[in-house]
Image 1 (tube, rainbow, N blue to C red):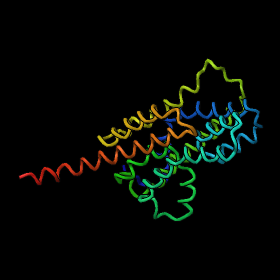
Image 2 (image 1 turned 60 degrees about the horizontal axis):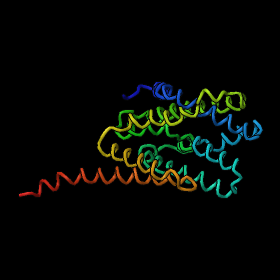
Image 3 (image 1 turned 90 degrees about the horizontal axis):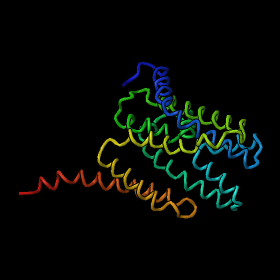
Image 4 (image 1 turned 180 degrees about the horizontal axis):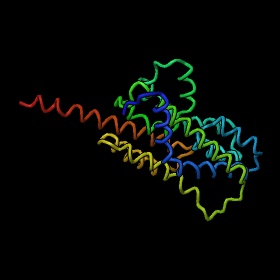
Length: 240
């Protein structure tokens, strides 16, 4: 899937992101509505969105603010939830580290679950060619715009969204849409199964540590499975 120009790669990235917007828009609407419902001003709510740029962390932070949790605990919780971006960036760094800072800094800031899911395997396979970073930029910028405009719409709508719409139900569906295409082999399946089970079993841990536990457990399961698969041919070759 090598592209002939930077513009073609960028637009292909935008088009790749568009099918995921039905799951992102309701998530943003719920976040914006929740902020206004808590008594935040529109300017404060939008500023929080622009600074965070992490829907899950922002949602949890809003809930903790509503419960009167001390600010230090809120910040620590948000950092814990966003630890997954360390794994994301470590996975993508070998493919993008040679870019100048005028590229790496904004691309790092625009990293999201959706952009990582769309680009990680394509970067590893090399199928995006020399304009790979333009493809990633297309997914990242499109996601940034969709998310912020969705939250802004939720802020402007305030608490007028009917509960019967059940917009919150679309949030896990949007992440399932990212997960299923990423399961391409046994290690990724092991990571998904173990991570999912741990997320359910550890859901009641304080400070959202269940999410971190699930992430670490899933990664460990995937790495262990991959190591076992790589060692299997060697063991067979040693058999007389």
